[in-house]
Image 1 (tube, rainbow, N blue to C red):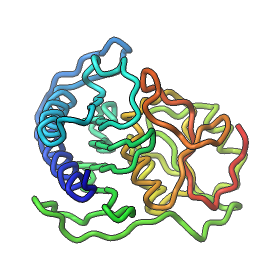
Image 2 (cartoon, rainbow, N blue to C red):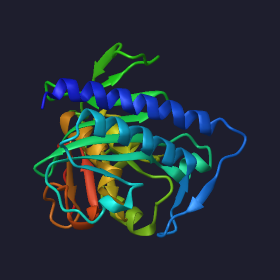
Image 3 (cartoon, rainbow, N blue to C red):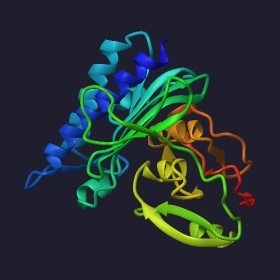
Image 4 (spheres, one colour):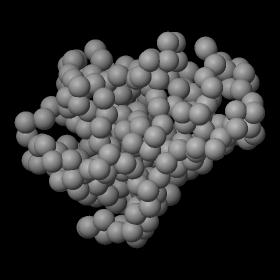
Amino acid sequence: MQSESMMIELRRLALEAGARIMEIYGADDFEVRAKSDASPVTEADEAADALISAGLRAAFPDIPLVTEEQAATHGQTLSTFLIVDPLDGTKEFVQRRGDFTVNIAYVVDGTPVLGVVYAPARERLFYTTAEGGAVEEKGPFGPTPGEVAPIGVNSTLDNRALMVVASKSHRDQATDDYIGQYGVRDMTSAGSSLKFCLVATGEADLYPRLGRTMEWDTAAGDAVLRAAGGQVVRFDDHTPLAYGKPGFDNPFFIAFAPGVLLVKG
């Protein structure tokens, strides 16, 4: 599979889904329901999922597809597949806080190798390149890629003064206690997979997640961060986070720039 042609398609679908999401976001009201796990789902999640799924199945019919909104895909165990979170950060969307993203990734042998993260309300677009790097594209976003800037993790960080990013909606005492073991210069909060991208651009150095996530929440941001020189490891043993696990549940994890001296949890 040609990485460049695949990335063109992933980028296109992310932008189209983002445009549809923003149409609904701008409406006076929209439907919000609770899923079986009590998490919220909106008509924007479902519209974006339908759009992306149709596009990926048409373009890559031989590659298995996993999406958050299609429960029938969740019982699979896969090693190479496409994985989608059509609207990551639904709580941010419902509360109109802007920190939500469209995530599309391609996983090969358990590792996310291609990914796009689009934050339509923030007008930020990040993706991997065919050459193995990562970029942020500058808007306005058109049918073909515009001006891009290579991104990379902070290579001059000071472990006595780290910049840490944590979740807006899922912050807890265990996370604060873990962060407290580091020398922290400042902290910021962000929703959705934007946290991976802030580490990828060097705007943050460390993102620990001591809470439940699914592979579709992390795969695209993980791909971008790895391509930018960062790492994503399990919280318990610091081995690389793997994909295609039964049920697609993630363990706790840490995303970071390689210069960070990790503390054992």
